[in-house]
Length: 199
Length: 199
Image (cartoon, rainbow over all chains, first blue to last red; front, side):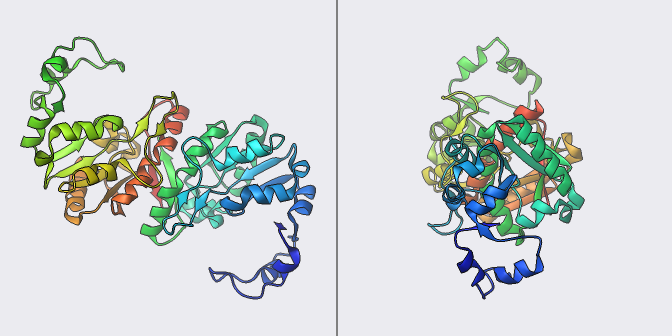
């Protein structure tokens, strides 16, 4: 798991703003994970998961290093949400472009696949927590092999309804779903929901 | 049913680009409907349904006449899709504004409710055609009475899972779902689908 400053992250002693335990406590309970700089984490990685704030994604991946991303699968689960003008956030890129495409343009040798950005983190890795797992997840990307590998990883996590939306420009569609996700979050009072494409 | 030029509409003899019969043929088979100018149709109407092209909505409603809309419920089922740069279309308004809000600002005495814009026309009036009707429709609007009336109309059409997303600014969310709808349409090869919010 990459971070900007390992020492600073390990010095945290307070719960985060959601009440989660500080990182050192969490790492102690999850000893199969190690904390490293973005560059060291990416150098060792086979698959990169971009799970940082959407506004920080390009900077974090630049810190990871272009050479450490080349030829690798990047699962982009982030959303370009801009909270700077208050709630609800807007999208800092949309309609004619997407965060996923920005990442792909900045790192052309990587294989960017947009997925999982339409559900909250707990559901990403455990879809069964809602409706017995009977809901839909989307995949967008330019490289067919990278998308097949992504679909296999999603199946391992329990995703049964995986829809390939096409090339990476279709990431605009799932990123632009976020405003609806945020309104549903507000109405339902929980992020534990998802959508099923009924057809 | 309002149109710009009744005589021109009644002179149509060719099927439309989807192969549907020309308007006079359709009206002959649906004799409970009458064609009128936008203004005459709106003057007689109790509820106005904005079902014209999103790029033409403001002009069509202006032709209907502000006085003919005042105090009335406007169901806005249109989407601000811009096809001028080819497929897939973009949204001509999004993120910080919506077509529904534009309509409400232009006609402040009307009660605009955004709904039904997330499904194809046949499903709007017959949700049972997909998944036995077990999918979700959204409602956005500033006037609680207008939204309650809308929900009652939706129930009459067979909608069982109606979610009130809040004030009219939440129409941004359902309009911004359209890019995902369009991708799904491309993947599935049919507009006969809808989403269910699983929670």
